[in-house]
Amino acid sequence: MFGHYNGKIPVLILTGMASGLICGLLGAGGGIVTVFLLRALWGERAESGGKDIFSATVAVMLPVCAFSAFLYSRTGALPLSYVLPYVLPAVLGGLCGAWLLDKIDLSRVRLIFSLLVLYCGITLVARG
Amino acid sequence: MRFLLAFACALLAGLGVGGGGLFVLFLTLMEGLPQLTAQGVNLLFFLFSSAASLFVHAGRRRIPWLWVLWISLGGITGALFGSRLALALTGSVLRRLFGGFLIFSGLYSLWGLLGKKKDKNLQKSKNISSKTLYKTK
Image (cartoon, rainbow over all chains, first blue to last red; front, side, top):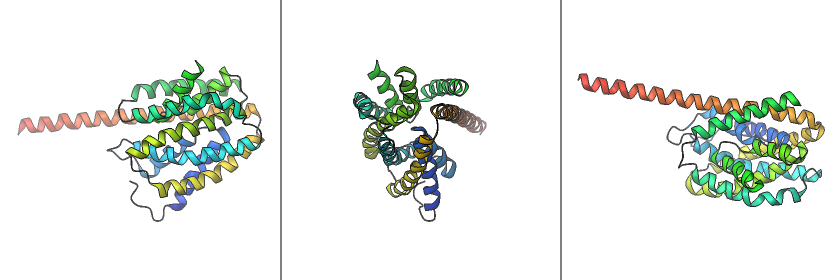
């Protein structure tokens, strides 16, 4: 899937712009937009079940999140003292998640996550 | 408790299920942070979490670094507009937008699950029909 490259630069940049816009606006969600657009554009590689797309997305989100965080911090909306307690669980969780990706069936986790997120989303929109 | 919840969100993000949205919810609903601050904290949180995940992914998979470069360039431009827009909006509007994103995220995830179930059923029926064909021969 990732072999052909020529002529795709504008599409790649536009994909990035959409994910960056969401990431900067909502502080989350850039990854899901990137995965959604890459899947829509090039489909999933059957042998990897889309995990290659996900790995590429993680690599993309690193600089995009770093830049967005930099922009937030310049306005004073990001006190570093709030972040420090979460550094260790973030690193440990990230490592464990990536390690487990090839080892477990995620269907049930995804189902619970989807329903929970839907419920929270509807509540937030309704409450305002 | 804080540690466990943050760990669970990073774990979900590392698994590709998407823990970022949940972490923002945790920060706003349980920690009482304003929406914009929670979003900023989530960005930094995800920075550490995705750096750790990438360390594992890069060792296992083929990451198309040239693609990553172009998408990231677009992403940085988009983030510039997105964060400016976030600063211009009120907390209430941001929360509603965030809620809309969560609804999209949940529906997209459910749609993916249904697609996989259909593929599995199709594969099963193909296997059954090829076995029947083999027996009749």
